[in-house]
Length: 113
Image (tube, rainbow, N blue to C red):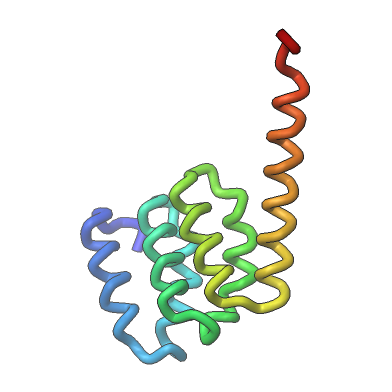
């Protein structure tokens, strides 16, 4: 799908959502690896809608918690929360703890006055 326009990719993702889960989840996992951030975000959003039945996508989604695009990370976090496997929830918790630590370090580095 890398040679298609973003709008066409989005439409394809919407059509994939209408497929049976056995077919849709593998296609969406592949889309999570697309170069276009919008396609990755759309795939994560679709996996969120599928929920628990998208558990095969968890390892790829966990990797995308480090995506450069904030919108992708947000949709990925939502998908992991909705899928709700122990592995997904542990990854989310670790990410929250890491973000909290970074915020704390940032606050400590500011001048006191």
